[in-house]
Image (tube, rainbow, N blue to C red; front, side):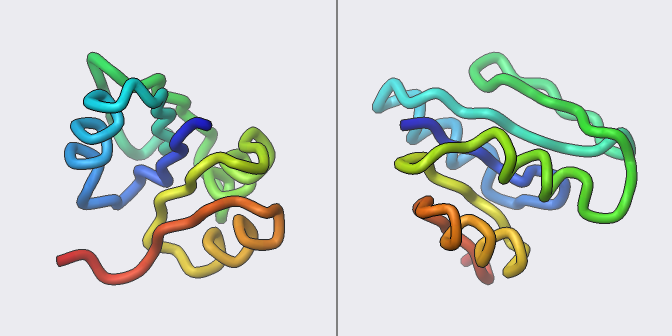
Length: 92
C-alpha cells in the first residue's frame, strides 16, 4: 500500500505525511511544474504543465490497494474505477 497525493492544491499534504510516517506508509506527491514541493519523507514527482497532466500520471502509476488523496472529483472517480481507495472533498 502506498499513498498518492494530487498535491497541486492539496491543503492536507502535511497531515497525510505525518500520519503516513507514523505508520511507515510510503507517500508520493505529484504536482506540475507550476508548483514547487519539497519533502523530507515523500517522493515528489513533477509532471509537465498541462490540463489534467498530474491527474493522469497519478492514476497511471498507482495500483489496486493504494490510497489516492485529491480534491478533484474526476481523480476520485478514476481512482474508484481502478479499484483504489480515495479521499476527496472539502477539507475541514
